[in-house]
Length: 254
Ligand SMILES: [Zn+2]
Ligand SMILES: [Zn+2]
Image (cartoon, rainbow, N blue to C red):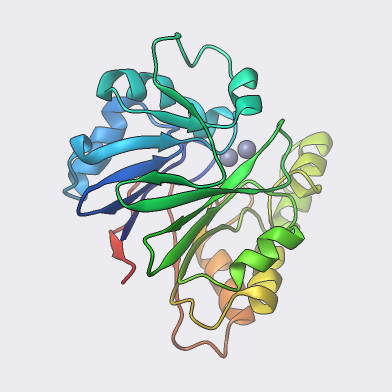
């Protein structure tokens, strides 16, 4: 399977996972026009997208879901509680499918993984092609036991590395927002992510993308250096950073 992170951060998220049969998009916080532009940049055809999966109802993840589903006539996989919490996204004529424990699209099995975040029922996703397993895990305040457990069996991972704790503490955000971001239902810091990877990432993992970086309270080089410092003895592991404004190069998870 192939992984392309089209956008990552609080201004919009979209991750494409594809096979020769087509692909699925995890979240879409981009306009159709911007999504298509980015797909074109990485030479991917929008028509290959067969389904949309939704992690939670924050607008940076769901803003572009309804319109893309209508335009492309593709199904949206979403939790019932998340669907009930969305506002002004769906018109009623979309093909909505309530997430099951295992969902099959394009020869991939997609499974939700519960995370802790400040919405009704947030999840991350595990995606398997039968041979390799990938997880896309962002928007979580702390790594739950379930998240820690799943990290042991992954070939590739997209993981939040949202903020540098010192930059957040000394930065311009109001107190309540600092509390929200650093709290148990907010976002993982570079240090939390590094510790979690060191403790729980399995030996077969070859690729880790650091994602959902804060523009105000982080720097790509800092997130990367922090993660590297926790993963010094893993030469087989490639670490990369996903961006907000440009798609990442497509990675093959073979
Ligand atoms: Zn988010
Ligand atoms: Zn969120």
